[in-house]
Image (cartoon, rainbow, N blue to C red):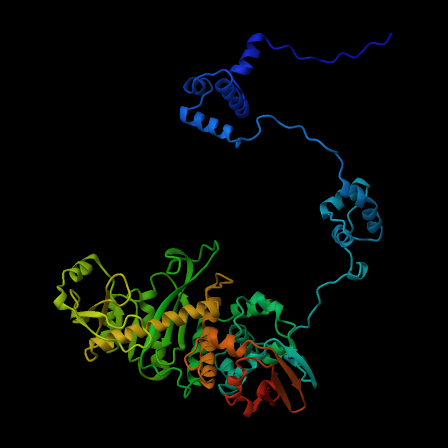
Amino acid sequence: MWHRQAVPISAPKSLTDCLRFFAQPATARQRQYEALRAYFLDQLPTIEAARRFGYSPGAFRVLCHNFRRDVLPDLFATPSRGPRTQPTKSRAYEHVIALRKRNYSVYEISQALKDQGITISATAVREILAKDGFAPLPRRLDEERPDLIRPTIEAVADVRNFLLAPGKFTTRLGGLFLFIPDLVRLNLDALAVSAKLPGSRMIPAGHALRTSLALKLWAIERKSHVMALVADQGLALFAGLNVFPKKSFLSEYSCRITPQKVAALLATWHSQAVGESLFDGQSINLDIHTVPFFGEDPQVQDHYVSRRSRRQPGILTFLAQDADSHVFCYSNADIRKGEEADEIFRFIEFWTRRHGTPPQHLVFDSTLTTFAGLDRLDADHITFITLRRRSPNLIAEINQLPPSAWRQITLDVPHRKYQTPRVFEQKARPLKRGYRQLFVNDLGHDQPTILLTNDTKATARQLITRYAKRMLIENALADAVRFFHIDALSSSVGLKVDFDMALLILASSLYRLLGRRMRGYHDAQARQIFRDLLDMPASITVAETEITVCFERRAHLPIVLASGLLQTPVAVPWWNNRTLRFVA
């Protein structure tokens, strides 16, 4: 006789357990169901239904509101329906096995099936192969892989392989060659040697500096972005190399340049630029800019970022701009917290060493230095104009001035919206030295502007006009942030930023020299010069004795034609003295 095997059965619930299951729900969904059922079906009052199931009256009313509007999740699970198979896997099964037998990897199988209209992920392919007992492929050589499109291996940058073979090619960076006449005249190779910049037999110092400067001139945001241009023959020709260096070299090279070498580079640049009217030094605008850092490096200090109105990790950079030429003439990113007030004197020391005399006139904000620093400037007979912070006492003093104490002046600043401010002048209190203090209203700010100066000769109108023109450094700095990508930090290492700021000095000077050649662009910002005159492709022809750059026709090309560059061939030293000639 056959006997059925006994199946263990749990003891049945008692009546008390069954009642407790409905009266004391164990899960949130069941509690919601029982509470709603008691309210809608059993007609219990709201307060009693809420109390029975542990809700506050307000929370229970919200539950009923959501239930009426059908915004609650499903109270009961809905059984799944439909086939339990995977049609795509089933359809792709034979193809997957066939491609694996041809030595395809899971990713190659997935891409091959996608090309045939069968979309299946690499994970699904791997599951099919594992189910049929296929082991993962061992690492293969390139010749063992299927013929697919792969990255090409570009040549290594080496000046010894730089051959100017006759030929013709097209470059998208044609406007970059317009800087070569100024680079030749200012002798950039001698600049790199004088500053003792690092170099090698493969990439000498002058070539390395030219490659780094090319990125800044063409407004390439990060060094890694150069990988999209390393195959451009025009960029390599500009640098004087067989190919343009990769991002690994550019990043490593900037790490080898110490702050001392940056200072030597700027000093030599000032010497090379003598006679170009770039750094007259009659009046200089000073500013400190925080380059924000979005990382977690513990060595990066927190500084105030004006654009975001908050403190965050960043690197302080000090900038000086010639007021007449609007060219940046000095920078330093090797500043730690607490050293901001002394940076102005490091700049004065740098300027005195290079030009023999200290700067005559400085204009800066109140945060640049302290009152003790102002006294030191006055003792050194350096004229300054600065802002004074609006303390509550000063604001109260301004508000108590009668209307008759103010006088209206007219500023000689063309195209300025607010040209008729009101001014009140007095001696600054309680400072030790008798500085002139000017309260200025109607200058375009919500609160009065407070100027502080040791200039005893200029009139109030001249002082306010000069400070109003200082806003040009704000515009130039904002333009440099956008165009030269000052805020695009690729590292938290300060010396990288220091070298990047030095490249900004060289690039802004070259843009100003080029803008002076072009009619109507004497005072244009670098962003406008690049957009109108430089961002254009060109055809380059290499001959035995000269290299010809032929620009394509475009709207602003007549301005380039009228500059005289096309009528003045230039012998380029790093091209074995072959002549550069522009044609259109």
